[in-house]
Length: 253
Image (cartoon, rainbow, N blue to C red; front, side, top):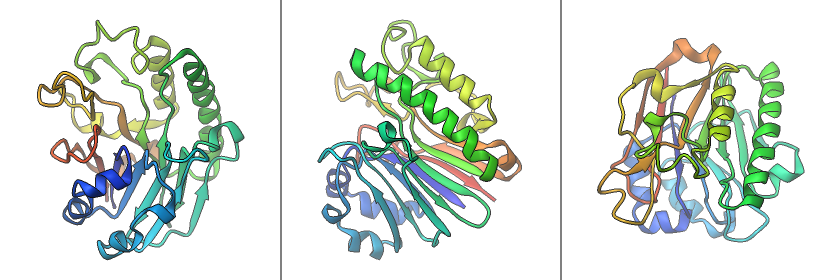
C-alpha cells in the first residue's frame, strides 16, 4: 500500500494549482490531507472520484475555512472513525482514521503553537493524543499516523536549529514530546530509510525560503512497530508545489 500525507493549506486552492492532475500521477492507494479549510460540499468530489478515489472522507472544523482533515482512498475501508471522542480535540477537525483488513491509516493535523494560548492548547492536545493512541493501539496495533505534527524532531530536521530553538515547532518541550511519542513504538518512516540532512516538508512563504531550501520537516508518516518488516520505502516529494508544505510518502508491502 502506497500512502501519502499532504497538508494542502486549503484543498480548493490546491486544486486550482493542479492538485488533481498531480494526484493522478502520484497514484497513492490512500492520501491523507490536512488543513483542507473546507467542508465536503465545498470540495469538487466528482473530480477526485474521476481521478480514481471513489472513497472520500472529510472531517471539517466547526469554524468555517479553518483546519480540517480528509482521507481519499482507492480501497473501501472496513470502518471510518471521525475524531477521537475528546471534545477539545475534535471541534477543530484534526483526526480521521480509516481501517482496512491489515492496517489502519490516520490523518492527523496537530495544532501549531503560534501564541501562548495556542501553545497551551497544543501541549494539552499532545498529551491527550498520546493517551488516546496508546489505548487505540491495544485494539489496532497496525497503525500508520500520517500528518502535519507541527514539530521538528531533531536538529537535522530544520534549516537553522540555533535561531529557531525558541520558536514553537522546535521548542525543547515539543521535541521531547515527539521523541517520547516515537519511543512508544512508532517509527519515523522517512528517517528509517534516510539519515541525510536538508530534507524538509514545509517552507515559509517569506524570504524565498523554498527556493533556498530553508525549511522544516514537520510532516511525518509514523508507522507502528509491528509494521516495520513491511516498510518498503519512504520519501519526501518537494517537487509538488500546491501548498507551503509538500507531500510525504510511505510504501508498505
